[in-house]
Image (cartoon, rainbow, N blue to C red; front, top):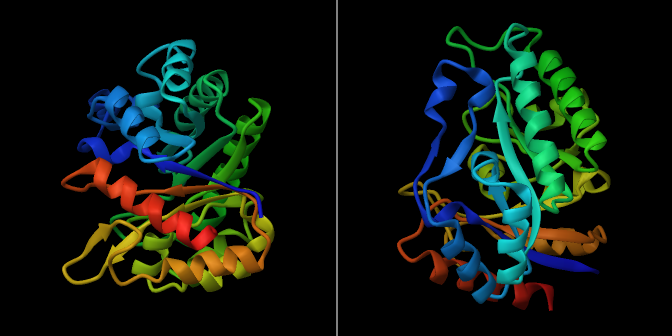
Length: 271
């Protein structure tokens, strides 16, 4: 199995967003408030070949400059991540305009994948058409990514309308996007990540692996916590997965140490 190892750069500082997005939806990007040059250096030093960054960090500088920095660090930009509401027709054109801008920049910076999350939870609860609207919006986002030369993936996520296993199965009956499983989010929502990898094996082209500690709730390196990521890797092997495996850890006291521990875990299990 041809697997390459990458790491998300979100662990080196607090997660936030572009405040202008409060009043202008098209500017509402994710961002890690951190020194990305340090993150890239640490990720490469921990042994990874690739990296994923948030759309806000991607747009901070010219794609050619970012591509040069990554090359200097010995890394490849695997993917970028965006989120959106997707279920509100009035703002959808603004969200898709942002996705188009991000996709173009990601492709120019050397990325091959685009990870997309979202599906807003309404104050009054989920409406009957919300899943249909989400599926249609994801397909439009996937078309935009495809025109830029990127492979688009939907990433189920806590705090959206797609959390638990029945919701995951439902949305992938309504969109043609690939499935990017995040093992910690799937498990925290009551899913069995290894079983879900097997269920959607034909639609997985990028994987996010993350450790989960249930009590008190928190994310961990892959060698810690309550989630058996080894079982997920066995499922990937059994289904002949080939491609990037992205380790992720939202925050950790020593980001390099967390990255290195997860890399050692991956090397042991993919040996």
